[in-house]
Image 1 (cartoon, rainbow, N blue to C red):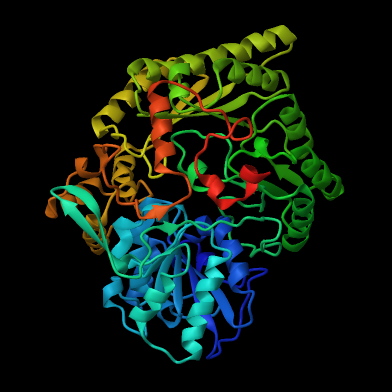
Image 2 (image 1 turned 90 degrees about the vertical axis):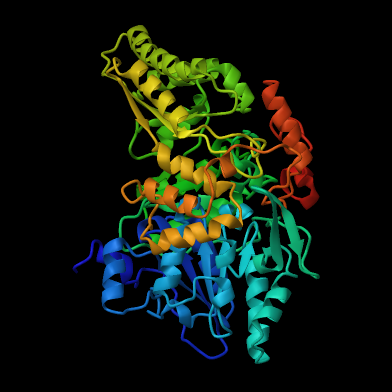
Length: 604
């Protein structure tokens, strides 16, 4: 009781799975390198927890990063970090599997390994140590963390995780204890990258490719699930002890996105678009609510409005939910008459805030990033919403997009002010009494990411970001109905280093952890001066990783194949500079390469 939120560390939740520990069991601990409240909101955890607990010979337990107060208690009392289900130390498992959704969690991986009694560097682990593996979107460029992982899963895990676990069982059943041979066999499984088999080369300060061990694949191809209706889905998920970040049940509608926004890594990593049927989703949604006691069901996708079965799905769920006073949460809707009517029907709490993501303040820049909307779309949608009784709007933008000028930054303020005026004009037209609108403008920093058309771009400097923030703040400060919030510049600049970094960053991250840098994603714990000093210690500079590349340069993530071709990304980059739109996948195929999977929208 001497730490904040003890419920994070006790387990015992509704629907947790506790299996007896036996000699033949392949034991995996799913490690989430952030606190319980964030990790338990992660759908991948719930999915893979169900998948790996499926076979009788396989078990999966959970562990999370302890908050600094609990970290100190564990160290002082010499208690190893343990799983929630059986309270087993992490070093007693066969596999420690990390989910990586954000680069700024890297030092928390080391915190968990250290507290769990597992050597931090893969080269230092013995035959008795767990295999340390990683999955999640960040693994598309794992090079800054490559020295710490034995194997890395590329793409979706439902099938490949079991193939990997079956290989571990085979080695255990045969009594084999040859870690190097096991890693070479793991590398033969499609979708798994074994970093120790690849030695990076450098020319001066630039990455220049890999020397690849004989037998290792030249390219590691992303795994996907072709038929989402047939794959395991957690209809009896673990219900958290605490109030978590997204405290509701979830349905995953589809994977991928048809839109092709050029800054959006997820939109390219998860191609091709594959939908679940409305019938399957209705059955799963009703079952989840029955098994959890939640009264709110969220719908997960990159763009809910683009789900083709949305009317059928929502009608089917609401018919069951209404008598039980259950509701639907519908994020990522494109606002039109249908969407507003649906939100009125779906939510018990009407007139909650609306969220829009124009991303850029001018049409020119929205065309550069292939956003696919114009100001008329935004204003007509908001007029509908204001007339329907909504008065709270949140607008998301990015600063530092390729080709951005101060005129584009000013366009953000202009759009927000037009929306404020639209609200009052709409209220006057209706003749009703209006309350003050609440308009929030939120800006984050554009960070070029691998496997996007902007992966070669230069990132704005700290000074450029701060100048743009300051200018926008000054433009909006006189408008009392408009609130401006912004993301921290220093953490964004460091994220830019990690996103496109290479193995020279491994010792930087190790030193950062040893000097107390954990929870770097949390502004109160991020220590920019310390990180800059560590970079300088290794003769590295911010510019080495953020000044951009030629489209002909070798890239640290070239060994990974996500299906989307580099030729397509180059074409999209050229179209960005020409301010030309690419149609969405349902309107016209752009030939991105994802058809190689012979699945989903490419083959409907």
